[in-house]
Length: 342
Image (cartoon, rainbow, N blue to C red; front, side, top):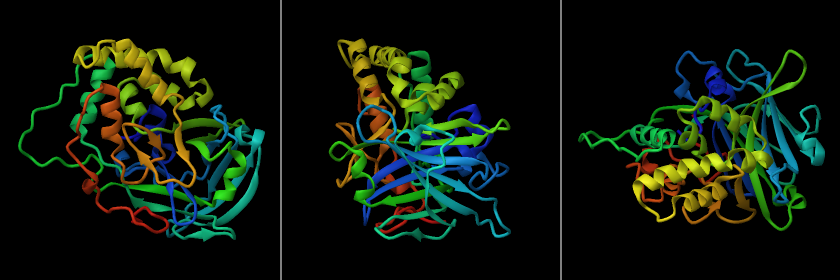
């Protein structure tokens, strides 16, 4: 999994679990995509978007890991056909990090339909094929290694064809396309950092943070078998990531690469990895093709092999998952909403 069902809170209600975050160049501007509510939660899990929750894209344009602008979505209850009303708001400056701020309404509409506004802004939210693929045996082996400080013990091939963990699974996808002039005023240059957040309304009138997702695979690699760490990763603000998690990620990487013998200085390599993945924000340069690769992170396209990239980075070795983008049930499209609508 990339971020699928990564914590007890996420497993309690998959509608609040961000399985993946993508940022890439679209037909009109920058596309932000957040997938939630994976079918991997099982047939009895609640479906759709939670009507008492918020789904937010947070954007840092100044490099301090603090949001400068946020795009917040709220959904109504499902009608008899399963459709939900959706509202998109923008929050700027201090309001972007204020749970009690209302922001400015940009769009209203209904799930399953494209909603647009003048200038190129458009939104689609609905049920879609999961564009992420993963070999279940490999992700478990990696998680065990980083939990126990051991080598990655991959299972021996059994001759059977490997199937993606998410084959046949659908998600609820939020696809927001923003024209450049909606983002550039908040940047120094054209560089941004993006992360997604879900929060649930509390009985006391506030908001409880449930999930946070920036880079892919951070939680499955470092916290797949550590629920306490997984919850902490979700609830910590990006600006606090380095002091909170830097030493732990350094040590976990150093232990694994030390056993694998891929570097003469495991601790130094662990620090390099911690520096790459913290703060846990997805970087992107506005106006450029997305490419999530071993050498650099620049957004994330829907068909980037993020799992293999992150496994190779964390283990300091070429670690294949034995699957490619052909493992997904329906490939993404070159036109809005880009995801394969179910």
